[in-house]
Image 1 (cartoon, helix red, strand yellow):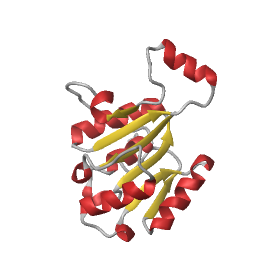
Image 2 (cartoon, helix red, strand yellow):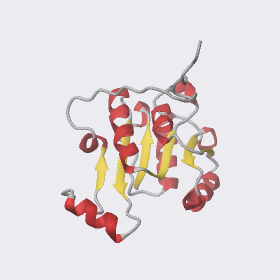
Image 3 (tube, one colour):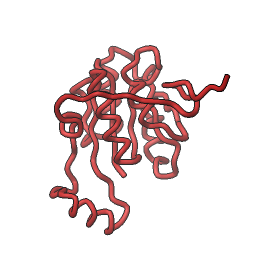
Length: 166
């Protein structure tokens, strides 16, 4: 798993995974010149996010809970008309890398930190060459060099239309 935070171009350089959700919400609110009450934070609807959801709601920001699709939710932060301003939460690490690549192409920002569920995952990361298991990764570290992002949809979603039969 990976702890994640993502935003669009207008808040690039403002988010900080080491800061609290409240601090990030206030910073993004200021960067977007929006009231906190007009800010929408997308979060995967999972039991692990109960405290996060409460924290976000206490700020007055809107929480948009999703069942899945944090890649498309992260991308949505880059589209002004999506209504999504910030993504926060824990989800799959591969999806975090994909989101970072997409946001690099769109001018957004992303930070992630591996979140291990057990010792086996820690050992696997070490075998893969991860030396600092608590490192916060920036978008540039996760999507180095020239990046291209391409997506296809099987089912309908906010980002893509699914397969159609004629």
